[in-house]
Length: 176
Image 1 (cartoon, one colour):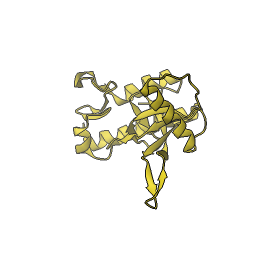
Image 2 (cartoon, one colour):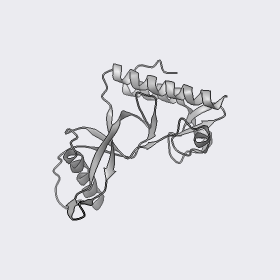
Image 3 (tube, rainbow, N blue to C red):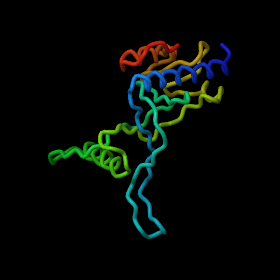
Image 4 (tube, rainbow, N blue to C red):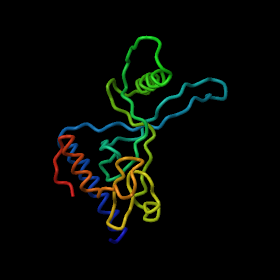
């Protein structure tokens, strides 16, 4: 298969999947980049926060955008003011702090926030051939690694993967 054509086709089915989810009334998840603690003007301490970077639809191993972009999701949190009993594990305290940080950054209560999603290089044939994340360019087109540790023999064609994910979310199934 012609690699540039395969990447163009992948962008098209990704955009189509996002459009079908939007048409079904499914709201997109918000994307944000983490901003570490810092000092303003060199002296005023600033807490860690999040900066909005866009939105997309989380379809299992990938986050798709309306423009046909794809991202490897980072951490996923829901912006909530959840009050929990004391004596929590450190990891639970960290998650609670992330949820509060999302609220402090201006995300509405209950919003799903995908932190630090990594863009997948759908415009670069060589980078996609070397990709080890959720989307890879194979001999038969763009394939999905739906489990991070899955071997190459378990890769699924992108259009089929999206169709299955749309079926699970209640979106239409004409992708691909």
